[in-house]
View 1 (cartoon, rainbow, N blue to C red):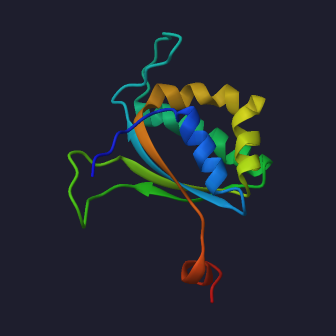
View 2 (tube, rainbow, N blue to C red):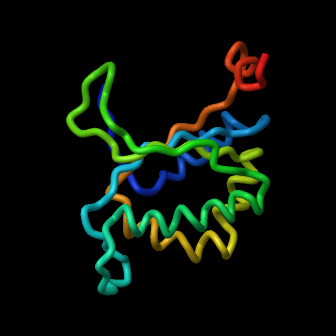
View 3 (cartoon, one colour):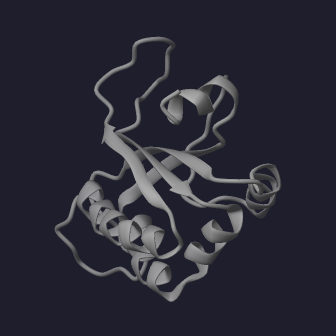
Amino acid sequence: MHYENAVEPTQEQIAATLGRTSDGPIYMVNLLKYKERAEYPDGRETSLTGREAYDLYGAGVVETLADVGGRVVWGGEVTGLLIGKVEDLWDDVAIAMYPSGAAMIQMFTSEKYQAIHVHREAGLAGQLNIATRIKGALADLANGA
């Protein structure tokens, strides 16, 4: 299996994700890889690491998710690989819940989100975002059944 970290989705990826997950909540699994040093697109000088810049973005995401009815479900540092093989592990994993595709687009296009997005660009070397939806036996587990 080949994978490729990226910072921004393609238009095709956005359309496909919204098409597959339009019914009900979207749980976005984020596999995050940070730059060693933050690099802002406007060239500003900074002493921040990539992780520190992304943390500024993350704090704002908590607020912007709440504005559209979403939330951060879980987040943590990658400490190892139990099964499989990759050249380089991601640094962190985070899961965010959006109530719908429309809510996700509403958040991404909001002025508040646009204001914090620069920290995401500055901090991320790349990532994988995996859109998921709870169904079947997993839905029962998630609901405590």
